[in-house]
Structure formats: structure tokens, C-alpha cells
Amino acid sequence: MDPPLWKRVRELDWSDTGIPEKEFRSVQKLLQDLSSHKEARAMKASQKLWNLLKPPTPLGPILKPFLFEIRAISTRPVQREIDDLVGRIEE
Image (cartoon, rainbow, N blue to C red; front, side, top):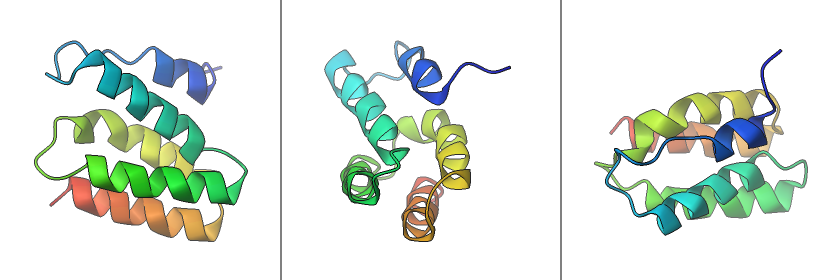
């Protein structure tokens, strides 16, 4: 069985992304919030991630698998937000 999402997010290796550790820790928190069962929290996190994912960004390849996983457990409105985030990564 895979470790829980929050644990895998905390274990992400950010060192070769060129992103400062403080910013990466912020992204990790946003992913955790995006996976929240509280829709308002998830929507707020998606908006913040949108602002961080301005192309080109080295975060895209790291975050994409997590976004797909979170999408599978999210409400429809949050799924639409995640679809937009994935689209932004692929721009």
C-alpha cells in the first residue's frame, strides 16, 4: 500500500528544481489543502497554486501526478479547478 498523499508530498525532492525551500514548503502545504474535504479550503489552495504555476515552471512535472491523484478524490468544482491547473502546466 502506498503511503498517504500528505506523506508523499512532504517527501518530495525539491533540491534540483531551483526553487527555494521556503517556496517549495508552501507548495507542499497548498497540495495538502487542495486535497482537503473542505471545499472552500481546496478552492483557495487551487487559486494560490494557479498564481504559482505561471509557465514555464519547474514545478509542473513534480506536481502533475499529485494533481491527478487529488482530482480523483475531489468534488466536481475542485476537479474543474485541478483541470485548469493541469492545463496551465501544459501551456
